[in-house]
Image (tube, rainbow, N blue to C red):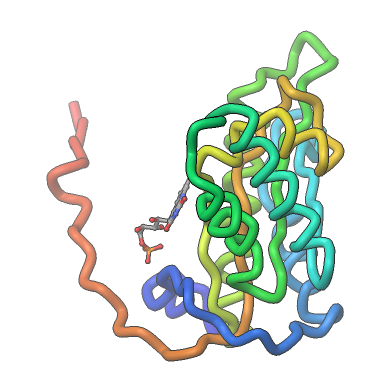
Length: 186
Ligand SMILES: Cc1cc2nc3c(=O)[nH]c(=O)nc-3n(C[C@H](O)[C@H](O)[C@H](O)COP(=O)(O)O)c2cc1C
């Protein structure tokens, strides 16, 4: 698939089959991700690939965290949260390194990692995978970050849920660029 076709036909797909995704395919996505531009060549991306029982462990952490923050929720709420990471056979959590060099700005590291995620999403699409970038309260949760090996101050840009599509959904029409663009020619 050429790059323009991938860009114009990619859309989020949340309903995927439980079938495993071969490691070689996941590695192809990660290799595409790290081709993104990054200022000062700091390679600020960090990926945590979760599959199998690791997703259950993530669900446990999410439920425990929710319970400590919202103790009045009914017990069913824990069950619901525990099941969230089981929606796809693979989840890639994507974090951002904090700058250590004063020349490096955190917003630039975040921008580079967002570009890496888009590379990953486009490659997933070209490989016939369904993918969706999810955040929710969990991406900002210190307990979830700790489980993934991130510091509380580190940005976790989200979770990329991946799997082979259950149904291939219609590509939604997208608004254009015109109302978001100003041309400055003089
Ligand atoms: C930073 C970010 C966070 C997102 N978080 C969620 C989320 O928590 N749940 C969700 O269903 N979609 C999430 N999305 C996906 C968007 O809902 C989706 O990209 C948007 O609806 C446009 O659809 P498209 O990806 O098919 O173009 C997120 C997207 C971005 C960029």
